[in-house]
Image 1 (cartoon, rainbow over the protein chains, first blue to last red):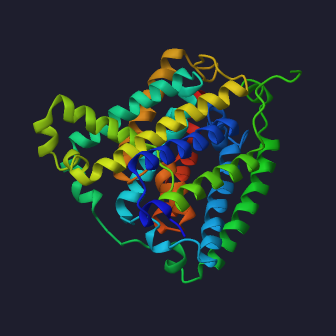
Image 2 (cartoon, each protein chain N blue to C red; image 1 turned 30 degrees about the vertical axis):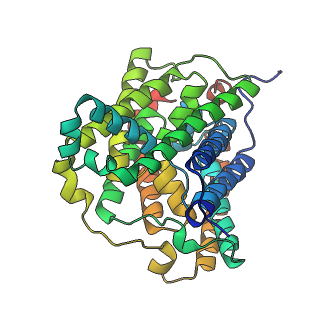
Image 3 (cartoon, each protein chain N blue to C red; image 1 turned 30 degrees about the horizontal axis):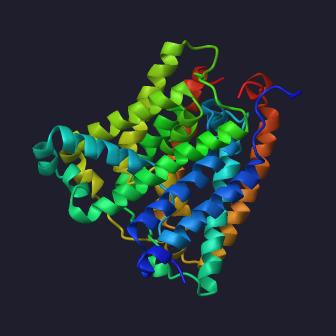
Length: 200
Length: 172
């Protein structure tokens, strides 16, 4: 029965070892996928390389289906699995700022760590920028506090908010992802940039 | 190697494996993956070391300095340390370890560095406002079917697409 750590008395050292091993798998797969290259990541937004879409949605669907099956067979207590809290205003504005950071900087926090690990200098500066950005948020927190806590809607599930079962939502997400993969692969042919693909 | 460029894993296979790592995290700990949280821990610990009084009186830093927050902080830092080592191992086995500043030939190194710093700062700031980044809010949030996860994902990718034209010289 999972989740293991909240249900059983796990020594702190073992818990931290689990953290390290999960990170190890996370970093290894990100790098193998090519997320250590800013021009490969940016290819998503110009159509010449949609690896981001393929990896991101395949991973989200694998995780989602895995949780559905674990729950179905009674192998996980979903009430102990963290469900993201929905603060509508800050989720949207925070997401917009992150999107700008993505297209300007070429990474997100996880990919920048994995890229810096193999020697990407642009990624090291991105991490430096990230530290500054978080520090600035911390120092100016009181200016944003109201915005940060505005429109709190609780731990809402998308399936509940559109009124379908979890299984139907999973089906919708899978169908949408397959359609996006199909369109994306056509875009990769149309916006092909061999000069860039040979470099990254 | 006959072909130029790097050989990466099939993206669907890589996505599947990443999904299994995510699932393992849920099964073992009840939480998914994260990245920005560890960077925040570094900032909070640094501020607390340099100016303890300032950190304790700040409503932002003090939230993460209370006793029960410590295990979570250590967990995230260890996880991201794993990302660093995992990325390094992958780069080593695939022959991709070398120092490189990646950019379009149309811009200078200096401009790329400026853009990386600005982009990083925006991402760091946004991840605090949005309560998590692409890993913790978007990917993990989508796997648990949270509305917040889907909204954050659409805001991140939608904005990047909308602004792509203006920053095209940096990449293509």
